[in-house]
Image 1 (cartoon, helix red, strand yellow):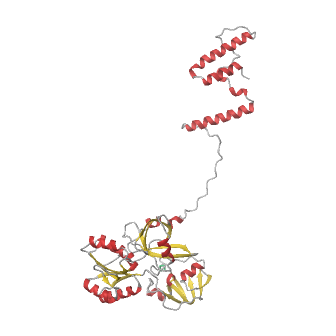
Image 2 (image 1 turned 120 degrees about the vertical axis):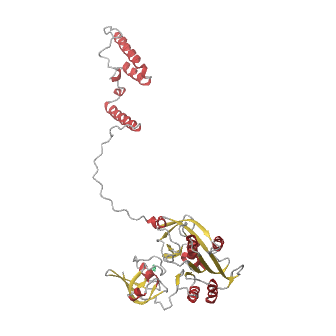
Length: 441
Ligand code: FES
């Protein structure tokens, strides 16, 4: 146990500035000498060190504590000292020696993040009372930017069913991508997208697809659009004008002026490119200005095409079936044979579709059997829990092509070639069973 004088000096030395330590030590020695003399010990000169008196630095305050507690306090003190040194950037020994770790097992390859198939709505624009544009952003769109005229497939769970629909991009190539959706009566997806989706929402999407593009076109371009069929057409027109096409004509029909999607955008383009771009408007109700009153019938289109005195041209058509058929006939009569069409609504099959036919999916020797309720083969397969290939879900891309045995009716036209038909292929997204059917996967 340290002498009380030593302890007192130790405390004093710890709290006093370091330069006082020699003097405190001297006082301590003197005090010990005085006390020694008072205790009857032989008098010693005050300046001579007493060998029984330990140097001040060896006096430990913790020695007043029981040894076990003192040891623990010393250990904590050491640890704190090391932590303090580490904080000051020095590298003391570790407090705890770690066990060597076994080498980590190789990690499985990283899977594609589910988020990659999501697109965020960054902006929503009400184009007309029923049409809305949704600007989209996401890794998938960054990786495969849409080309002018292509479409985006959107997937959502609506009313307990997974629903997929495709919508054309209305943005010019290279611009911030956006799709435009017109709400149709009883259209679950179009109602959802036009009335419920807000900015910041995230949609599940598939990569942009479609061949309704400006590949290998003539210099002169004719576009014929009806209603929301303008969506891919305006994308193509703006892109073609930027690319320098010298002659671009648009014939565009609508029910009313108010229903006319992109009226201002198209007007602005025609004013900017006055020399290269002309527009003929058809309006059924309340035509004004230079708009033609009525529908773009075959006779009306023939008149307009003759007036344009077309040289070799490429024509693009997108609109309701009656207008599309009228436009195809009028273009043929005007000598335009490079005609490209985009259907923006799935046509009804003209034949009787069975609502109780057995559909057997042959999945590599295993059979999955489901009963048709009049849906497409793609929908029946998905209802049966199968993952079938598809993209556009409207007969336009050919991704869902599968071999089928049995009586099937397909919406026409579609992307299937005559040779594929002869070989027994169908597009499952637009095929319905008229009797027992076997689908080979
Ligand atoms: S999914 Fe595109 S044609 Fe069927």
